[in-house]
Length: 371
Ligand SMILES: Nc1ncnc2c1ncn2[C@@H]1O[C@H](COP(=O)(O)OP(=O)(O)OP(=O)(O)O)[C@@H](O)[C@H]1O
Ligand SMILES: [Mg+2]
Image (cartoon, rainbow, N blue to C red; front, side, top):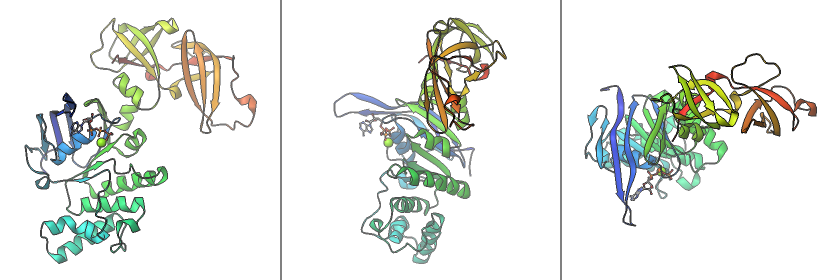
């Protein structure tokens, strides 16, 4: 395969004129480089430009500005069927009157492939998605998950370099969706094909992806591995969109590469932490972000950096964890503690009004750009 990147978007813009007559930047200067063999996800809420980005890679839409490269070559206005990419659409779009075999064979027949060749390749594709033996069924004689697999087989039968998947599991119930997530991921690893996967489900993206592009309002807010995105979100939007976080306003008092001091009015104190966003400057107003499970409630003053006294206002038991809500100076803080011990003894919970000591570990106290 030519080049390091399977797909590249360089400064791509897509403007639509809406029926209401205004111009809308559905995709707004997006740049991303998707590596060969990578499971790459675009993650963002409804309307952020995921499907539009995917349709431009597939060739169903053309960029207003910028350029898309597949295997290192600018694709320009190359039509969809001449691109070595294939799409699995959200509503699988199976032909209801055709059998599984005919659905999967359809693309090859349109290309005029020989009968024997078609037979061989359909059998192989159905084997990949574990549907061997179901060739003669029609879509309505299959479960949702099986129909979804027919859609994947149909996209794989032409052996694309890149498979584009637009919320392929959206219609499935949670349990089946989780099974299919692991199946699709395993299939991708086994085939070594590049997957570009669109979802608005953060857990799905974290579970399946090698890297994720977090999108909002047509723009990419961060690209990184699941761990990078969760542990080191580079701005408030990403910290807020993925998982949960405590946020405080603050101002940078001193700044070095791996450590900064930020004054937080609501805590009436300085916090030591990690400057994460690019281009932060001394004196800048920032957002402090700390995940609830990273805060430690402690019995002793083991360290004096980022140590606070808080008062418990509520505790909520949710099985795996207990959520502890606290007042700390003028700020509200939530802390998630894992229930490693049995909680059968009511005395094992903090009581409302109880005073506790808290540590905000500097390596997980993140200073982010305001946005
Ligand atoms: N053909 C079109 N004409 C005008 N506006 C469009 C067109 N297609 C999409 N849009 C608008 O562009 C924006 C991005 O749409 P897109 O379908 O890419 O979002 P999405 O991230 O896939 O959302 P969802 O998660 O709901 O599928 C939306 O505001 C949508 O209304
Ligand atoms: Mg969409």
